[in-house]
Amino acid sequence: MIKKKFGLTALICLVMLVTMMSGCGTSSDSDKPTAQSADGQEASTEKMKLKFWTYYPEQTKIDGYFMNFLKKKFDFDADFYVASSDTSKEKLNLAIASGDIPDWWKSLSFQEYDKLIKQDVVAEIKMEDLEKYAPKYLAFLHKVLGDDPFKYLRRDGKIYGLPGIWDLAPHGGVVGFREDWLKKVGITKTPETLDEMEEALKKFRNDDPDGNSKQDTYGITGTAGTIGDLFSFIFGAYGVYPGAFTEDNGKVVRGEILPAAKEALTVLNRWYKEGLIDPEFIVNKGNNVQDKMIQEKSGAVATYWFGLAQDGVFCCNDIYAGLHKANPNASFAMIPGPKGPNGDYGMQQGNALFGVDIMFGKQLEKDHDKMIKYLQVFEFTSFEVESKIALTYGEEGKTFKKTADGGFEYIKPYDDQKERWKYGFGGAYSVPGGWNDDYNEELSTFDTKDKSMLPLRSKLMELGTGKFDILGPIDRPIYNDYKERLDKLTMQTFLDMIIGKKPISEFDNYVAEWNKMGGDKVMEEAQQAFEKLNQQ
Image (tube, rainbow, N blue to C red; front, side):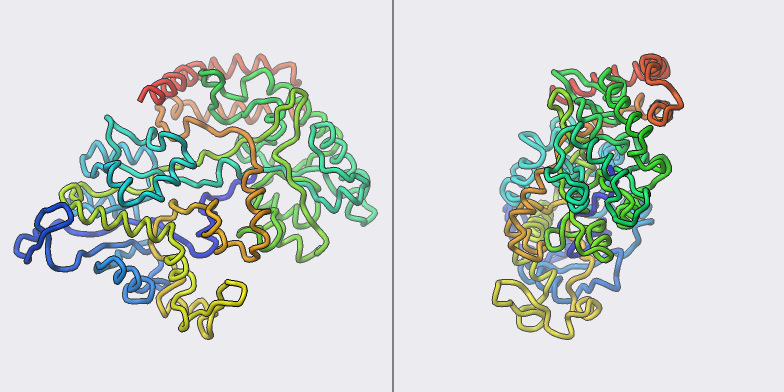
């Protein structure tokens, strides 16, 4: 499957949201006049100051419309801490080392999360605060991650960070066919099984679907960027998922060493020998695959559904948009993957939990009101239409007006992006990028231009089927040590078997070598990690 950065959320299509942390100091407030706080403690009568990180100062204004809108609504002062994406981690570490712990920061790996917890610089986040001050966020987490959305982040029974999630990831990958090519070669039904797909690929290769009287098209293109990219839907048709740790009746398994993987490799070898697969799949990168679809060199591809969706459904439809410029009659039909002999189908999907979104500085355990204020602001900017309008369109009557169909239209000169930045909205303001519910119909209107497309969007959002790596969020030292060599062995073996350089009959020898190279230790560690996770 073609990989895109997880930043392709609905909100990113409207505005690039960036990594955040604050640069607040830890100086004493003892000389300031005080009043009772929400917790009954003494608090300063001066307005609370919240700090937000920006990588793009030319797009953001601390005294512009959007920030003033937030400051007025939640009664706080604000400041920006400016850096670049390249220096954010360094600045965070330097700030902590100097004792000037930021109020909050975001976008860390689980390894970094554990390191900071051990340094005792992180505040505990109470579940009751999330329930009271961020209920929509909490409901969103439950919807995407299940009954216990914090099980990967809980340490000694405490929560120190909020999950970084992309709700589209578990349903993103699909197989797309050139629908107009199917009709051109006489196929009236979108392929649903492996056999039907193979027949379509043969016709895409041999029946001149582009009408140029040359045999210059292939059935399908792809990439060997990672094991999970390698025609995952064929393996999914046999119920296995190479490149991922998945669960089968309480046991952790790895798809590349399961017997059914041999059946998938047999299919791929046959397709390759018959010229159905783009022979450059071995060296293709994601952009090469995209270019080949746009240049009409292939009739099928595995990618994210929104890359193939027609204009108006969602953002980021790169393949469809590029193809349509050259061929307005082109269209795609999508399936979750072809069904195999036992009815299995699907492809490797992404884990919705990709990291730690937000952590708060240790000092906020004593400054509870400030943590609450941050939670309220984050909740509002992520889930409320009022905030989406202010951030995207600005001030009604000044920068935009409502249209008869309930849409929004910029008032000149604010149809110019730079003018919007000057006024103080529409830029890369630091609100949590991982808190956006792409399935929320009310919010989805902001990145679905044509509201009549919403039913199609909802259907496509659930189309992707398959499994994802359930242990991705867990740090496993043995796996880290052996991963590179094991993946290299798997990739080279699979490629050799697909192109016929090595007989598939040697599959069992490959499995034995995989285990001998450390795979057996990796699987033992994986099972222990899985059991420990589910005992919390």
